[in-house]
Amino acid sequence: MNLTFYKYQGTGNDFVMIDNRQQVFDKNNTKRIAFLCDRRFGVGADGLILLENHNTCDFKMVYFNADGNESSMCGNGGRCIVAFANFLGVIKNEATFEAIDGIHKATITDVLVHLQMQDVITVEDHKTHVFLDTGSPHHVQMEANLSDFDVKFLGRQIRRGAPYNEAGSNINFVSKISEEKFRVRTYERGVEDETLSCGTGVTAVALAMNYIGETEKNQITLQTEGGDLQVSFENTDTGYKNIWLIGPATQVFKGIL
Image 1 (spheres, rainbow, N blue to C red):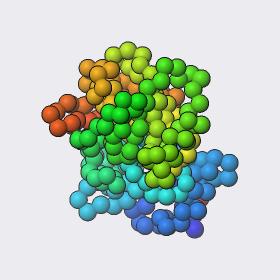
Image 2: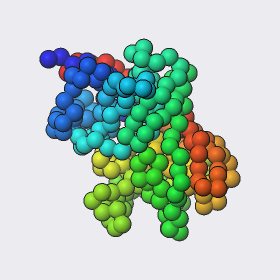
Image 3: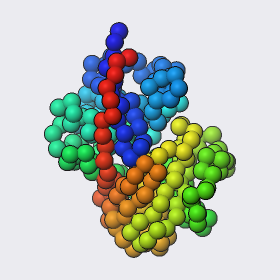
């Protein structure tokens, strides 16, 4: 059976996108998902995303990491699926959809997608790093020079070490450019490599930098290897709310499996 797929990318974070409203894709076939994400033998992507029907929202997002396993929330993937839903005619300029971490709202204008993230109540300052969950777990660590930094080696060590161990965490290394801008490089669990961009990661970095006093701004630009993203948020007595991840999401090509 032939199956049409689309390739999308958001600041270099790329995904195989499939319209699964008719339940034509086997979500339990981990090996096939991993094969499709393989950059040498398959299509090549950081993850695979299914768009499915939902009873009360515009659609449902089902996200798999490149290793073939269903995973926690992917921010750039969420932005890309909004662009995909717009392309399919499922939505126009606004969307409400369900992901693994709950309900998200989004708007789209041309290629720019604004995605509302879940509120963040708990931020842990461990002095050497900050830990928080923005739909996925994130370790945020400041480093002076990211240009020659071995993200893959050190990221893998931290990701699999205590206290994260096998469950793991995404690892973000950050350097400050200014009050309004930070550079970020991320090692993603499930991909098990550095990715060009991570949406939940830059969201975590923006909140962490505000929390530890590196910036007082509530809209921050995050410079990733794949391009710039913006994160805006509101501080509250109980954490952060009204958090928005903002950036481009574009279709790259269409193919048939």
